[in-house]
Image (tube, rainbow, N blue to C red; front, side, top):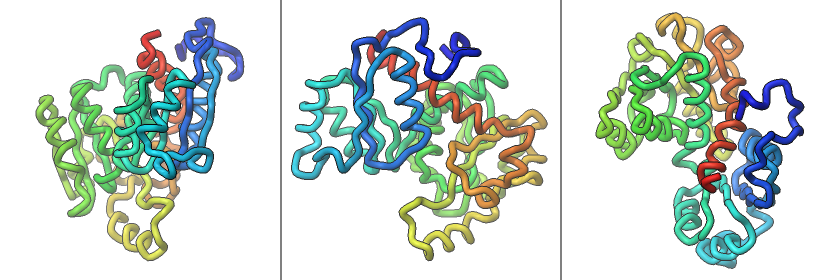
Amino acid sequence: MKTARAGRSKGEPDDEQPLAGHIVALIFEKPSTRTRVSFDVGVCQMGGKTLVLSGRDMHLGHGETIADTARVLSRFVDLIMIRTFNESVLTELAEHATVPVINGLTNRTHPCQIMADIMTFEEHRGPITGKKVVCYGDGHNNVFSSFLQGAAKFGFDITFSGPPGLAPEDEFMNMARKAGCSVAIEQDPVKAVQNADLVVTDTWVSMHDSQSAKEQRHNLLRPYQVNDDLMAHARADALFMHCLPAHREEEATSSVMDGPHSVIFDEAENRLHAQKAIMRWCLAI
């Protein structure tokens, strides 16, 4: 689908219109740039229509149960995407909806991002199976959790490097290990990046953290900044990814983000193409 759009204006429809006659509800309890724009544009390019809703527009869990909201929405739309805080909201919505529900992000997982990341890696370097991915920062991060889920599906190895106490959840690490992937925790950032094919980081703080919490996390995570010195210890052809938005000169330096290893803007664009594929897969069209 991406190749077929080469050279076209952004608003020009795809040759195939698989979502013609379909309505997709896009629910945003959590604010968004890439998720909002990529899903909205993707639906339009495939001939469908979107219904964009925020937490202020509906009674999701407030005055109406999530289960009832799911049942009602299923009478009006063909597909639901939700970007929310608690994963329990997503799972309850999916349990009671009679149309497919896509996880646009929760505090725990972010699978749409990982699909775009894997697509980006394979565009540049071929199959990701058997490759080494190194993730820096907070292992409780939703992107890192979904990278472990992705490893279990696509067969790549993961090394996490971050402070003690911030390692990924055992559930996700065990999932990858049971699938035959190597999952390692290495607190020394230089040792971790040896032979890395892909280096990944994400923001250190949430938009909802207090100032004192932000300062504490910065002090804790500063040794795990991805900078030129660290990238020099990875493979010469290693790629660098960040799902954005980024706090430049914090979790990663601008010299890395704008440097020869970086594919962050290809990664951002590929949210569009990967999510179009996800929607088609969900609807089997």
